[in-house]
Length: 149
Image (cartoon, rainbow, N blue to C red):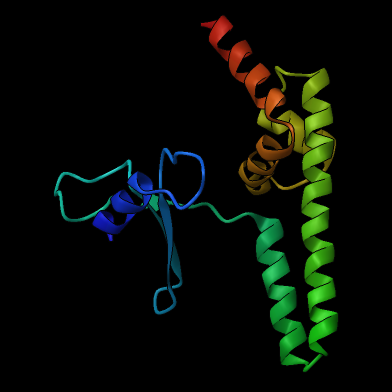
């Protein structure tokens, strides 16, 4: 797997170069998820380092609701509409977080989750989504952090 990830990062099918290739591995026997990377390896060269992936509560709730809908044999169009609505809610939460961080770049995780009303486990996901649609907010936070040091 590691050699495939390294190869994928070196030979991009996109027009732009890729700095890292990742693979999400879900073990349905143990109910675990690992994130493998072409950039991070363990001491043995043949086995990639599995990074622990935290579970965002909003995604857990989303998946559980879709599972329940399937169990109740709801029409697939309805399930898809529900999925799209919930993903849109994740996007809206990330835009609210972006707006808050633009005004309060030094806000801590507890403050952000308390004021904006989302679970602490959702914060890494929302910051990741935010970094795609509003990258300047993340750059400002990093700049603030570096200036503190």
